[in-house]
Image (cartoon, rainbow, N blue to C red):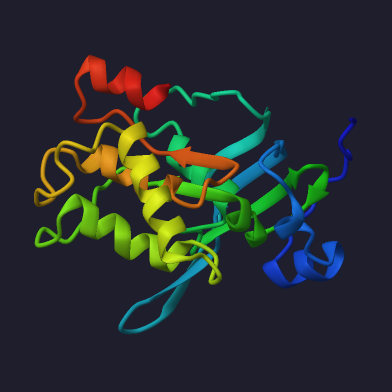
Length: 218
């Protein structure tokens, strides 16, 4: 499929909803993500001084002309030195943490151009692991299962899904222990609960040994 050549600002969530009649919820797990000509730069800002106001120019370009594609069953790795823009690209694709930035380009899911609605078909494993240390692994997943799974999901179905992700991420042994060294695996398990078609990961193997890193990638 040949993508449009035009370059324009990304659609807002409302524009995506109006243009697509939001078919996202009807898509299955075979989702193709494409992005074309993404450009991210620091937006113009005004700096207030005691005596006067100075308007700074939007100058610094963080990303320019970035295009790519991720197809079902494929692992795409973003590689580059520190500060190269890997996290900026992830945030742009997910339309998150973009305050103070000007973004141009196009993002497609299964051929449809969308904006913030991309979060409906994706999950994000952040670089920082943030958990309540008073909860056990199982308690944490139980809470998130209630929040993330569809409203009509029965308690038996929730229990089954929690058991599945614990097994897949090797969390069965520490299931009744307070959250500790397994935080990265638990972060993955949490995002996998509702079986998203796309999982974005920022530094996914940080703090893991080689064996566990391989397990996470698999």
